[in-house]
Length: 143
Image (cartoon, rainbow, N blue to C red):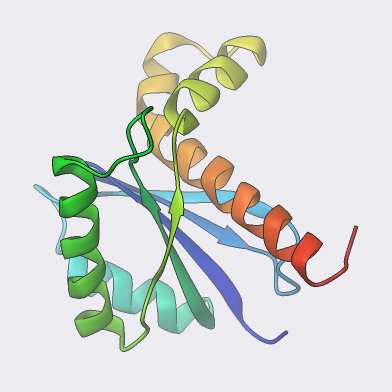
């Protein structure tokens, strides 16, 4: 595989961003894009170019009953914008419980409340991307 995989966890105000390693095995938190303070298009183009991104994965908030509602529709609309901005058609993946998992992991790691608030979105994006990478690895026969 060449190029990295970009994971995006879009929220109403902030977009959590994670990146895979070049082999697509490990996800790491990268940054948070604040749509009220930053130009999302400029930031996404910069990350895709600088990090040699070849695939984009967007978290899709599916309800516990397995259905897509308003937040999922917004994520799909965001995906259409991402394709326009980057030229890469995104892949969508279930992102249920990633924010709660990020919060739990940071609490367990002793991260203070103020720091958790700043890092939560990018850690959630990394959890979502890692789940995607793990499933993709199993599909490719990699354990």
